[in-house]
Image (tube, rainbow, N blue to C red; front, side, top):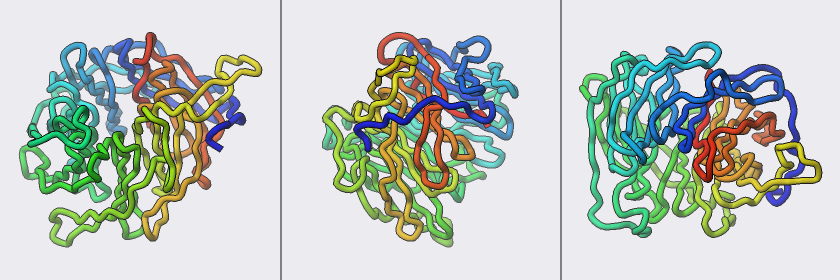
Length: 393
């Protein structure tokens, strides 16, 4: 199935959607409108978010968008924007921060705080966003590594790569790619920082956990990490304690990003993991495979282009184990970031090497990806196009 997928033709969606996308090479945050079978830029196609804008976090209740700028070519920052109904953005505040903020999540009462993972500077920080016009640092913790890990070129120091709020909203989990750890913080409304470190979970040695998602099934909670260095997915059961102390994480499997017995070509790097809104499926992206072909998106007849895959799995509610559902197309090469809409019917994928953002239909019952519904060029130049895309809803 993953060698050829020639049925992904263009089709018209039923309604309009606003999408935000970031890209390194044009240093821009772009607003896109998906309607009438087309994905088009809204108004001015560029809005400055610093030298290397990357991760986006949306406070949908207050229509505020937070953009992280990794700052490899300039000063790093967090920018807050007020979003209008049509997707236009107004800058509220710009806060200078440590270099390389790579992922963030809102937490605390009324989503008044922002937790941020810093990759290159080996740090975790919390910020006050109670007033998005006045962002402020609350706390910052810097980590060190006594000795390099199994991949010394990538694990010479701690490299925190994500910040994920758990389903109880009482804990924040931070995968540390450099240390092969999952760092856990407890949300504490009474503390000035808003969150305190309470423990770590040891990941598989040399796996390099990059991103993570939680899934709930009745009274059960599971955690899944996608691991960049080993190209694997690790699953855990999560057991909460009555006293609210550090939960118990028990590993239940560690399998290829293509499922048990699967393999990936040399040079492949897994990227993102997302949970479906119904908590019944996970999807991971894999960069550098070029294992799928799709019809050329420029309308060329009898022509196909290479695509990396988005790989979907169903979750066994009783055990947390995964079953491979599909190796589908990401819509191009290097799908660094992708997200689902709230209904789970659409996936938006950012293709960094192809300077392309695509919208793909998804069947919520089967978890299968379907037709490519729209695409747009975002970013210019070689290999530094869009790296994250997010629905505004």
